[in-house]
Image (cartoon, rainbow, N blue to C red; front, side, top):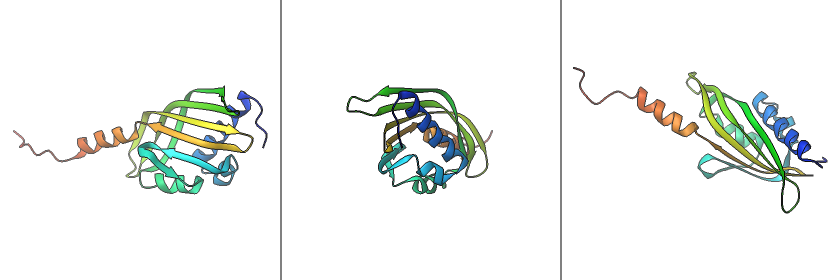
Length: 142
């Protein structure tokens, strides 16, 4: 794999995320270096593409991304840093749809592919708010 420019690094990050959304796991895995560190909200580390899918399977039937921006920068130690940000959409595990959940993915990319991904999103806050809204009220109805 050859990643020589910021544009190529940004394209690799998008190719990976698009493949993950389509569940083209072999294609996504080819974008990731063998020793990649993949960290998700709550500090959850995943060992690879299949582990990412397994980890999200208890929360989502489907999750996709609407991109607002993809920005790539030269990394001080070589390679590139790419930020992808936008909103998530999909279906919770119970089939209820969701949309508009903010996300940021930060990648470190070099000629070996993606060797670090850090993910931030507001999904947990949305799940907590949804659970509270669906919970039976402890106050009597008047």
